[in-house]
Amino acid sequence: MSTLPPVLHKPTLPVIGSPLFIISNPQLVIEQCKAGIVGSMPALNARPAAQLEDWLAEITETLAAWDRAHPEQPAAPFAINQIVHKSNDRLEHDMQVCAKYKVPIVITSLGAREDVNQAVHAWGGIVLHDVINNKFAHKAVEKGADGLIAVAAGAGGHAGTKSPFALVQEIRAWFDGPLALSGAIATGGGILAAQAMGADFAYIGSAFIATHEARAAEAYKQAIVDGTSDDIVYTNLFTGVHGNYLAPSIRAAGLDPEHLPESDPSKMNFGGGAAAKAWKDIWGCGQGIGAIQEVTSTADLVARLRREYQAARERLLRP
Ligand SMILES: Cc1cc2nc3c(=O)[nH]c(=O)nc-3n(C[C@H](O)[C@H](O)[C@H](O)COP(=O)(O)O)c2cc1C
Image (tube, rainbow, N blue to C red):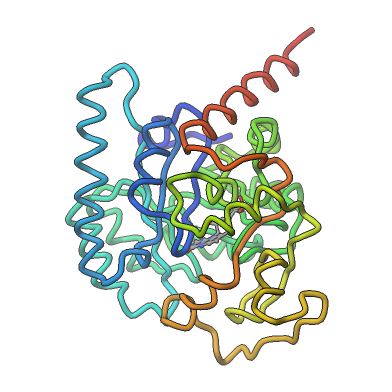
């Protein structure tokens, strides 16, 4: 565990609700923050780009009103995810809107950029950069990221192949700043395990897809309730980068999840129309969904994680 910047002391459960392409929206972010965990969404989910300003206004005003009404239980801070890959032609616009709203936490993925980090620092925010190996972790910190998100094997969306044990121990050997761990975490015990390994936060995505607030088809939510790790397929076919997806959605698209071709790396695309189409029909999902038994509200999901986390701590501390 590390010394955290003040903004990361605010969550009352050590969890960051991770950004989910297409799925995260202001309702999900607001409910996550009200429940005491960091809420986040990709800037690219606001379409057209002008909608980002409306969404940031809605999030900041709603959370400020919540804080006034509940001074004893203030909301956790929120984060906006920026895809800093060259295929994102909205980055400059979206960064300007984030600057206007002084977004407290920016999560960067797919590349690390010094200019983006400096811009966030200029308005008083912090940057967490997501990485799938120790080499990228070094690069991100050299370029000025304040903290890291270790995306281990089994994570939903673009995921790495490293064991969380290997990844966290290699990063913690030299980095004592804020560190979140992601990959198949869906229980309170999993959150405590991430901390026991040396992470400060669990970074949880797929579990939040099966909430009322998530902008996902009901069939997608139900597939998460019904599925287990056996239903998750790791492939680079859909975006050019390896990620985890639900097999039933691949079958529904007329493909055989057991025999998928390799992708063409020159067609990498993370933000444009083709990417949106792939992610709409082919459902990204991590391996942790065996713990998801129902579609529920975000508040109820966080309440379950909190209960389980407290129970796990008590169990471990018992003499
Ligand atoms: C459907 C889906 C969409 C995602 N979209 C993004 C994204 O736009 N940006 C990003 O940085 N990570 C994205 N991720 C990755 C998550 O932020 C996070 O790393 C992952 O969900 C954590 O693993 P878990 O799903 O097993 O909890 C996505 C994951 C999923 C499942």
